[in-house]
Image 1 (cartoon, rainbow, N blue to C red):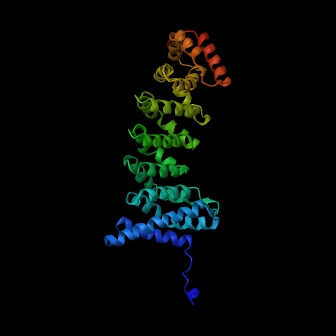
Image 2: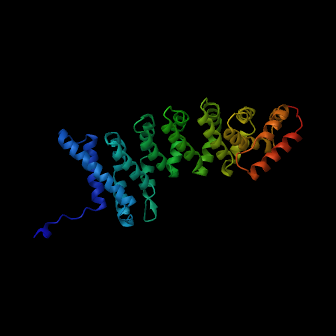
Image 3: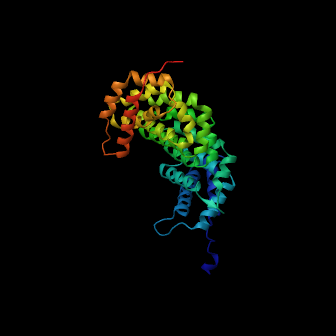
Length: 340
C-alpha cells in the first residue's frame, strides 16, 4: 500500500516556485515565529543548493538540458531574481555562494536557442542599480560583484550601465582599501570596457573628454601601484582595439596624455614600463602628430632614446624588440615643428 502514497517527484519548476515562496518569508513579506523562520531559511538554503545541482550537475550526474530549461523558464517567469538579490544579506555565507553561482549559470542558459535572462534583464534594468550598491557592502560585495559581471555579458545591460552614472563609481571601487573587492571591481570595469565592442566604441566616442580625464587623474596617476599597473594595461587593450581607432587617434594627439605616458615610462616597475610602452608607441606611430606632440618628443629625445634602449621584457620578445626599434628610429628622425 505504501507505494500508492509516494509523493510525486518535485520538478525544476516546482523547486523554483517553492524557492520563490521561501524568499517571500526571508524578505519578511510573510510574518512567522522565529523557530518557524529558521526552519524556512534552512529549507531555502537546501532549495538553492538543489537549483545549483540541477544547473551544474553533481558528482553523480551531468546537468540535464530539459531540467535546466524548465528551471530557467520558471526562474525568469516572475521576479525570482529580484527576490534573490534583495534577500542575499539574509542568507548564510555558503548559501550566498550557491545563489551567486545559480545567477551566473542562468545568464548563459538558452531556452529554444534564446538567452531569456537577457530579455528579463532588459525589462528589469533597475536590478543593476541594486547590484552596484552591493559594491559598498564589504560582506556582500564579492557576491553582488560576481552577479553584476555575469549580467553585463548581455549587451543591453552593459549599454545601460555605461550610459548611467554607475560607470563613474568604478573609478572609486577599483581603489577601495579591501584588496579582494578592489580587484573584483577592476575585473568588472575591464569587462565593461572590452566585451561589447560597438557599445564600448559608442560610449567612448560620446564620453571621451570626461572619461579619459578621470582615467588619467584617478587611475594612471593614482598613488596605488596596483591601480596604475591595471589601468595602463587596460588602457592599452582599449586603444589597441580596432573598434576604438577614432578614440585612439584623439587620445594620442593630447600633450597631457603624452606627459602621463612619459612619466609611466620612467616608473621603477618594469611591468608598468612595458605596458606604458605599448601605449606610448601609438603617439610615435601617429602619422598626423600635432606639432606640440612632435616638439615634446624632440625636446625629450635623448632621455627617451636612452630609456627605451635599456627597456627589455623579462622574456625574449621579438615583436617587442621590433616595435621598440621602430619607435627609436621614428624619434631619432623627428624634426622640430613650428606651432600654428
